[in-house]
Amino acid sequence: MAVDSKDIAVLAARAALEKKADDVKILDMKELTAETDYFVICSATTSTQTHSITGEIEAEMENAGVELARREGRSGNSWILLDYRNVVVHVFLQEDRNFYGLEKLWGDAKQVAVDPE
Image (cartoon, rainbow, N blue to C red):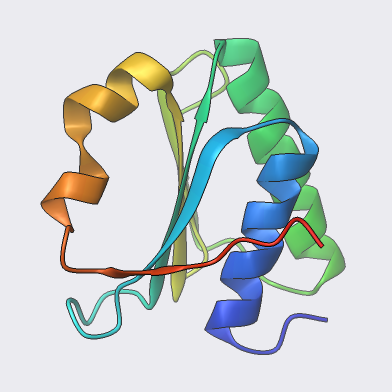
């Protein structure tokens, strides 16, 4: 069971990798914002894959007892956000990820290594 926000972020990243998400990154946001501890950012090649990735993340979180606070976007969207309070997961289609540039916007954030396990 995931016990702290870093464990939750790693669990989300691994779930995304299970569904073949591209360029999965965890950004440590603790020193940059009071709203959340970590961002998990990943890309998909199709909207069907965004749905698959978010479904896997939601299932893993539910199994770990981590409650989803808010979900924005649906399977047809190019950006789906899953808010687990201290961890916010962003699943993008690659073009939109490039456009919004969260990694550049939050360029001062430390990256946490994602080990597929």
